[in-house]
Length: 85
Image (tube, rainbow, N blue to C red; front, side, top):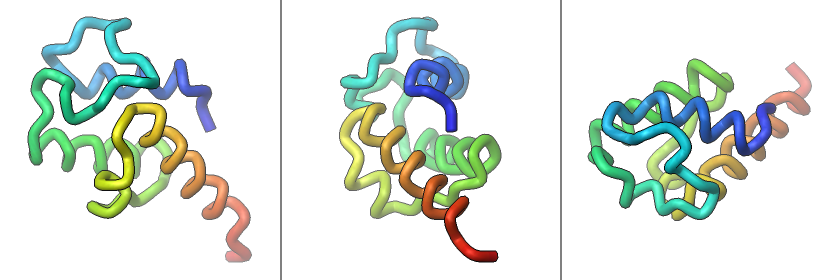
């Protein structure tokens, strides 16, 4: 799993109107310029593609900040890697 800094760099690329380096772990992702339900779907698809983790609406509701979102993705990734498949 990437560090939080790399996660932020990558997620910034998913927001067209956000200057690089402006998103922090404490940033409320819903307050990011351009955030919408469509952007939520883009982030869900990006997380799935980038990390192999499927987020759901409950995950997005639990997360408030980018740091929260990172921790949820990290937890799902860790659980998935430990799954005996």
